[in-house]
Image (cartoon, rainbow, N blue to C red; front, top):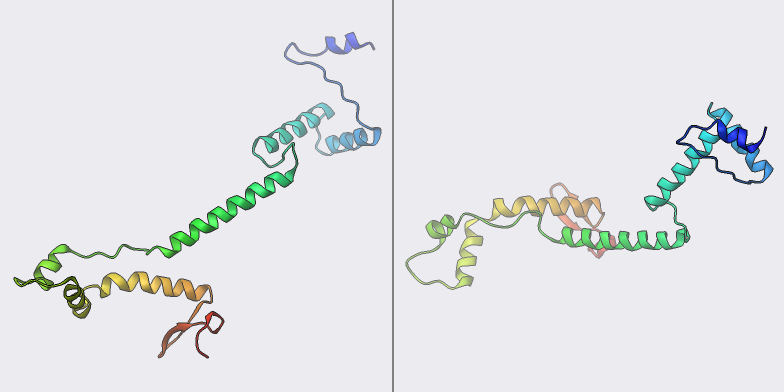
Length: 165
């Protein structure tokens, strides 16, 4: 059979591509194709398409994987910084109804900001607003083993975090 006879059997939308692997590699491909019940041609096409997908999505790099590893490490560090920033922010904004200020705190007499704050703290208006975020943060810190809780006593720094023994 000549090359021309081989090409004559291909449909119009197909072409032949020749590769020259080592004999043992070609045998391995043939075995793997047989295991999958597909032709060697289909097996190689599947492998090539799979490799192209890996390369396209950055899972395999033609210029070495070390550069990709470094990029991923930098991205992880950046995400960790962002997470720490978010954790340091309050989980809820501390706010309350302005009418509470007008009805319960302010009077017809001038008051300094310190006096207004003292009145708010003493009145307990912020207890409900602060309770959730503070409690959430304490449980988060306890999960990180940075604080400890004991019923009947309350919260304290973990001994590894500098709390008293």
